[in-house]
Length: 235
Image 1 (cartoon, rainbow, N blue to C red):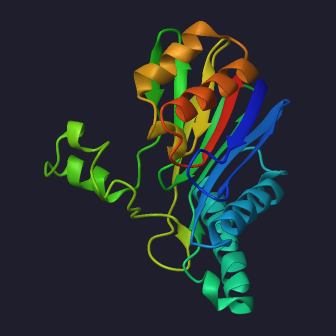
Image 2 (tube, rainbow, N blue to C red):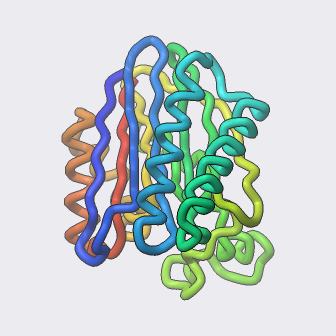
């Protein structure tokens, strides 16, 4: 595997609440977290999530539902510890997408609206399902797909790692064949670029670093209204 990670504060936000991690090898680990919770809360939450995931998954070959549950609960406890020290952080939380590779086999953990994509040839496949209010409304037939990108409630999360609400993560597996790609990203990318625009970057470039930098450049060019985090993995 060969990977590249990058984050950018964007053009509007005053601080960067996104964090990432990537480590290649026979067993690779790739992570994106998008924090929330006001002054310093989001930045701290995403950093805690990434650091905890790295520590907890370093001796693991596969992310199972049990391992995912334990990891999410440890992150939640660490967030709670920070809130005890500083109650003003009580609303902090974070999304989390982790991909652990063993050879070309990947196991993944996902909670929130950060996404994982599988790019194979001329196709792009979203591997994760956004844990958002608008996605629930879309699946129930209340909203049309075309309404989602500009809906005023599009950023409302129904799941995240926080002190409140649903902390249960999705767990899934997939395989990455040679010359295929995995993309992990925060919504700062996907709120600015369509899946087609993302795929076009992979058609133009084949190196993870060039792809990652170009995706961020285009997201900034398109408005850069949020922090952006991108991890690109090539088999």
